[in-house]
Length: 250
Image (cartoon, rainbow, N blue to C red; front, side):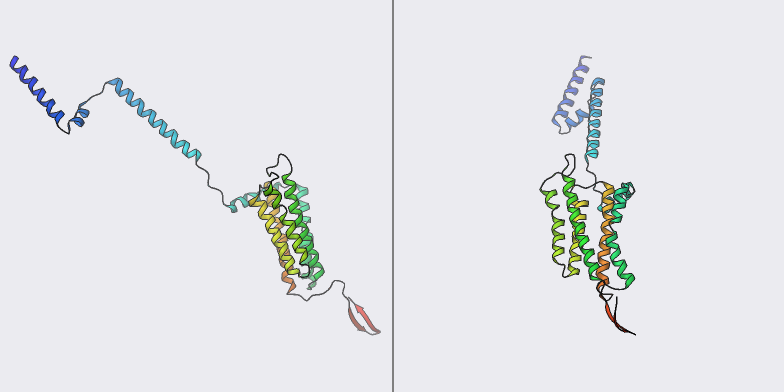
């Protein structure tokens, strides 16, 4: 029995020496190592904690991910749906303000005659509207609770439309260039109100788009009729030889 115990001890010593001297000894010891139950529970708890932390990290990344900006066309469609929310005074007064724009090409088309006086009146009214839009921007930036602060950006850009209107008046001898300058002023003012500066309420932006589009098309129609119909002065009388001599006919 003593001999058996000595041989078993020698065998265990030899096996341990082989394991320690072998490069695979450390992984084999880790494989053969069986942790106790408290150690298993502690390791499992640590794994669960790490998993929860990783899940929270992913959720935070998902929440902090910036939203893709909606295309400008989508924003414009959203604003146009707000047109029905326009206050009635603003909506009807805005439509009434289109009468000087629309009536001029309509009269010329009915009379089949180009009247330069009417074209000049339309251009002058358009320049007045362009100046008015710049003043609206200035007034929008003055109240204390306004989203548009009275800084150089807002107040400086509100001066640009009146300057364009002034240049349009300077080209009164060439109504085509004057009308084009008014169209540029309307486009610049609309760009400021929709994209560049702090914007107005949705219903007002929708109303601005509607009114600007109609005004621009009216000016373009007048420019087109300039080359289509013969020019005639308003109230111009042509001589007419009647039965009883020379007379004048409008």
